[in-house]
Length: 299
Image 1: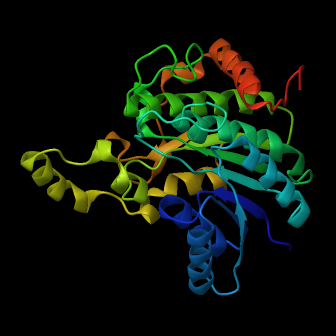
Image 2: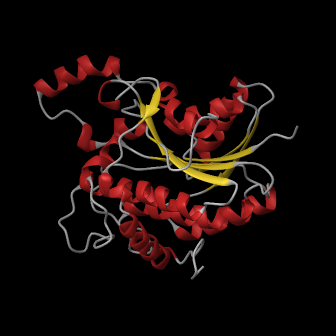
């Protein structure tokens, strides 16, 4: 049997690396979609050393830049052609207000708009003969965000880094629900999962998450040993990607206390992500912002 092909964005470190390794161990052909070519090459070498006989490749992708998404899709078509599983894992968190080349706020561009565009560009390549999945990686923080249809680029509200992150993840999870609705009747389902709170490079680098005083540093020293490793945190995402008992629109996370850690289980969704009319508005706005139209009358 030929290997199934998966694209994992942000595959060179942390959660993406752990996901890639687990899928290689399941005999998937893994396409590592990464922004930093040097880090991606090193990660690929490490994976191939860890999983003998594995099939891992690297293609460049900066999901925050729409031109990069276009180039990635073209390269994938030329080099691989067929896709079974797409895991939108790449993300950033807690940045000061920054904009990409198109003028989009960078967390929204990376965590949502780039994923919207990538799904639209990659849909034609999905295997037509077998069940396929799109898995979007959410976050606990989405519970504190609002559906941003009235201010996608932070030109109205006062920008706060963690508000920006939460808003981008609400958008991603609302998109997941609407995407799955629009895929009804096809062989593709869309679902999502979050890792809880994982010890990754993103959390380590995030200024917003660093202790500010001695008490916070003491608390962190006690909590850090309890924080799941990337391999542990990857389990809900892998469940969404591989388990047989899942359905389109499902949302998984760790099943332990406050969904911080534990075995995969159904997770709590912000009710705003189930707003059908809001999701339709978001889809329309996203098409205009990305220039990518798919799965609709105006596609």
